[in-house]
Length: 466
Image (cartoon, rainbow, N blue to C red):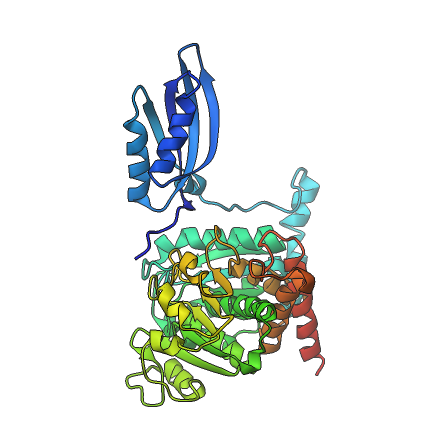
């Protein structure tokens, strides 16, 4: 089994006093490298004739690895490790978002219009025409990021309080990439009826609902019911955000290997929320064939004990009714998409795939197969990691999707909107710039969210005009 790779998620800054000689600082960097860490920065903060004090920042792979890096530094002669700071925890101190007024309240006149008595006129206007809330309140630009904490990242059922840092981060991304105001709504219940009831009651404040980190299969029912009961878009990012970006990336990967989606065979590991949405979107685009696999192997017509979502997949995929293991399903396949668990496959498994194969190993932080091994056999490799080429990241989709939905004052999110968003992301790379290491744009590409928003808005308006 491959060891985890260092990442910024386990970045630490170590304050160290070392001898002020030509080799002192160099020994620090060498010790970190020998312990498997990756030095990202080394800043001098103080010095005198005998000593130099530096802040050394490095990436590690996990907590124990960080401890071993620090131990390697402590073992150096005449080196004093004074303080170790976990940069991720420092970033989260006090939370990551805040509320900032959009209007000035400097005078009695301004207060009288923003609040009582002037605000009463606006309240009456909305009471007479409820749709005016989309124009005259924060509903115009605000999304609820709703979770029950039952499927937090790859960590499992941690509950609502532990889910809050993720939802805060999501809200920050909405604002950073699309100017959308989003707020975490972490519910202390995992009862489907209660979740639907609470979100329905909260909905008047929001222009859209982003469901997040709710476990399958409960998430499917919650989304379906809320879509039926609300007059604002409901979007489960773990499903549709992932599916949109995967389709965009696959579109460009197929351009690289010169294969047609309608002719390829795809194996998907993971039949939960993300995997199901990916497969449904690929089926809508006319994929040649898909084999869906869970921990028991391939879903097929004879599979027993399946929930309704998996049963649907068993009935609509796996054309030849293959019933074996994940590794067996890969033999001769053109594409592997993993949204499941780490280290399920080896490079030898990837070697059995078709020529010019494509591997999307998206389990985080550790993929289904070591990307270094996968690249020895596959033509295109993507992961969910920010420190690897071709990061499949939902931030390419959801900010622009909601920007478009809000701009169109859409009342639902639909399949044509998802397909339009995927096409916009794929085209943001530029056909002339696509290559094995660049199949999706950078998450920091400022053109992506506006392009996605425009595509979604156009799709929404076309549907409204029917």
